[in-house]
Image (cartoon, rainbow, N blue to C red; front, side):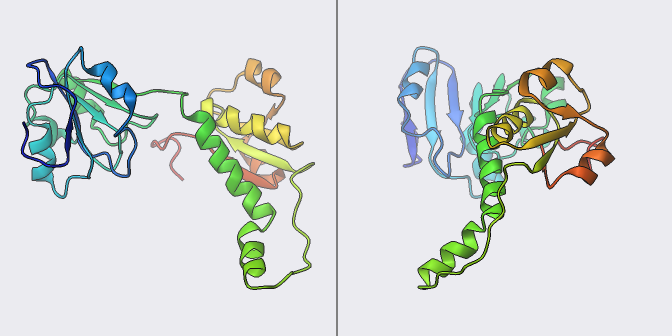
Length: 229
């Protein structure tokens, strides 16, 4: 048995070690699907975030696989060099920015993500923020809780124009939601797709035109040297 009281061990076999290094806030701890990994390896779930770099490395020291369920746990080149048994890192989402991809590639460590799977969740959150701003949700909720009933008009999204920067999985989900609310959509992308434009019923335009003619803008591009600022 491992000494850390927080460890949740799924098996006690000599199979390859699969480590979830810091599942806080809870993401996959307690999931019945963790048992699906038991035939392939010994699974250890750490239910708190490592307090420092030494603790992080100690948790992962013998791991063949890391399931990095939280992006706040970073794996840079210096970390990876101290994990001689590591063959694979996977994340529970789209972003791999918590991992030094170049260093992993040089060391032959496979890095996996789940592109597209969380796109509806991210787009719903972004659209909820847009809706909250347009309908003054936070202000009106606070006023009603204080016993007031302000008579102000909120802004309807129907008929407004949403500018979407980036038409990947998340951007297209955002467009789908906007169109369902009766919004017009102008979009810009590094890789414009006529098929997407027809399928989701929106128009591509130059970036300046999108910014100039949109009532709100939602940005869904990966942060790179090309997209910065």
